[in-house]
Structure formats: structure tokens, C-alpha cells
Image (cartoon, rainbow, N blue to C red; front, side, top):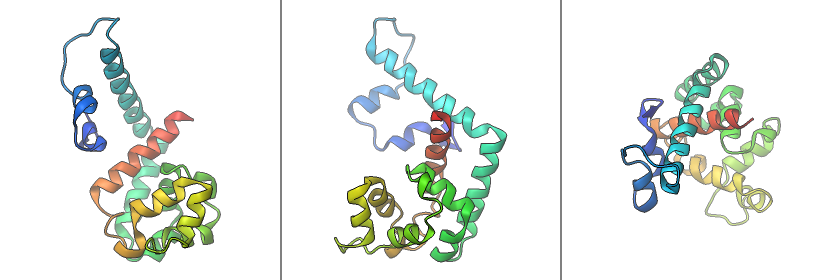
Length: 166
């Protein structure tokens, strides 16, 4: 099974232990098999998220996001683009902060080597701020991380999941 052209299992990191078992091709499982039930639930969830991503409105939002990210020539241009930031923030549990552009800029471009930076301060309030700043690393990496195909795909999946969960 794939989502956005990549195997769904690739978004769960290296597969060892339980995750390796979950993503193995297996035959039918009995109703009393909890691992089989978990495997089916994961598969059903992934399919439903993929279906949500295929809905016309969501597909358009994701296409605009990807275009905006790939066309951005600077971090400032990316941060000013509402299509890009809508998806990035929602995918990271920060959708309610979309209108706080100054705060978003300060946090996401923070120097993560400084424990007193905006990312760390806001991370104490909501850990999603710090994890998003770390994941994108805009301060040190510029657009390199956010423009990677893997990051774009992960953000698209996370966005589709937030829309599916609504």
C-alpha cells in the first residue's frame, strides 16, 4: 500500500519488533487475534487517510502546499505563504496559530542551540512548537529539510490525518 507514491510503512521509520510485524504481509487472522486486529486497524486507518487526501478540496490544498514549498526561494517566502503554513501548522497540531505570523516566524526560525530561544519557550507551553521547529530546522538548514520529498510527504499525510480526524 502506498500514500503519495511512498510505501506507508516508510513513514514509520525502520521496522523492528512490533512495527515489522504490523507491516508484514499476512494471511487472514482470527477474530481473537489482537495483533491481527491491530494490523487490520492500521491498514484501515491508512486507507481512510489516503481516501481523505484524495477528496477534491484536500487534494487541492495539498497540491497548493507542495507547489508553495517547492517554489519557495527563501525561508521568509515560505513563512509568508498561507497555503504552505496552513498545512505545516495543521500537520503539527498548531493550526490555531495560523494567524500568529510573527510568533510562527520567531519560533520556527529559532536557534535551537539556545535553550532560551522562542522554540524552547513556546515548547514549554505546547511541545508541538519545539518538535516542529526541530523537524524543519529552518534556522540551520534553511529550506533543505522542508523541501525534501520525504518531509513533504510526511506533512501531507499528517495534514490528511488531521482532516480525517475532524
